[in-house]
Length: 80
Image (cartoon, rainbow, N blue to C red):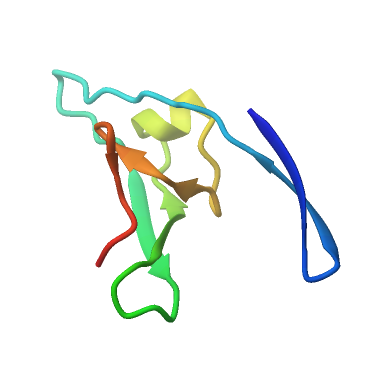
């Protein structure tokens, strides 16, 4: 889903995409390294900081470094 908006006089364009990655039975890793960033004491934003080469996420190719993670297993992830 695309979202257009404006914040502090700056136009922005966000793209939301639901991506499902499943762990393989052969032990191959999802391969995502996550980091958080926000000055709020209780809530934060989760981002992809690294994608392991030849991992499930790398082979799938839809998740990119810098992408924000909003949910994992249908749970919203924005709290420390």
